[in-house]
Image 1: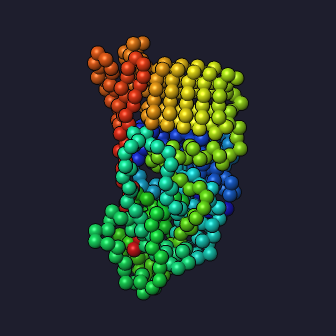
Image 2: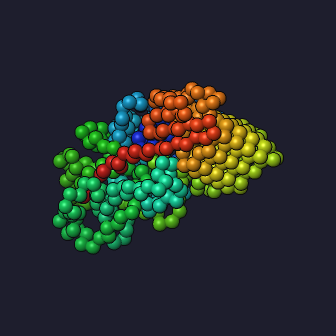
Length: 441
């Protein structure tokens, strides 16, 4: 294709830190594939043969050693590493690779999972000679209970107000509810040019953009445009509003044109919260024709694995175990008489005999001791949950431990595990960082 593909895979996952504390967001398993596989697959399916991947050294190492990724992804990956502590926004990352950009670009976030017909976004970009075209979809109402939120009213996120022309394609402005002090104010210049417009809410910015090469050139020469998301491309309607030079004047002449393709149907998820992660794991396996049980997995004939579950490579599933509506990751060991329902078991997890796990997320290399009864829990990477009578020590990767005669409390970044000899209860407290605010005026 005449566009260059750029994949943003350096974000730290600040809105789902309990999952990303020890596992980079691009490597989180979704449907037993790393999250980064999905945008790579999207690009490959439409004909891209090469993609620039902006990421960290940890993710680069995984990309070079993950055999399944190397087998599934045929594109050439031009990996560019940035410092993990650099906290680069999208504009900063594009400045970093400016020398590699020879044409207009297609920018995709590593946390995007979608079945969009990509040509819809590209065709808008071409047909209107646009400065930017982007993908949006309807905001999803997640159906699954999120660990730690059972019985609690979920705080609503700030809405985006999106203004489009009567065709629904020309993007006129974007404003976040958090930025509106006294109401939505529109510039007279926009009203004169577009006396009729549609104002939409309930839309998700998918973080998929087509961009003119001149955008990157402009960002390089105007590095005061510090942004968190590329939509600052149009702070106050055209991402270079911090600059009062030629580009700003060009917009008023109608030369800077932004367009949006809004998906009315189909799948489009930003996997950037725990709720979205759980929903993606529920929905994604239905999109592919892979066998639900990997050929290398060892599954007892006396176990029950539902057709709505996935068992990953090198797993061991023992006798009298029941797994329904769940994903079990690579090299996990599930002992006898375990019941797993509506849960996500990541890679390298061991679950001892007699456990009952419902609506939970068990992260990489965790160990769940015999007889644990867990409902709507999140267990972090490397955690060991054991009956106190067998092993009073709670092994951990972070946090501290307090002991009493009857139970052990383990505190980590946002979870409390209460251990008793017969059961384990986890109370998970979810703290979300508000979405970055941006606006087009």
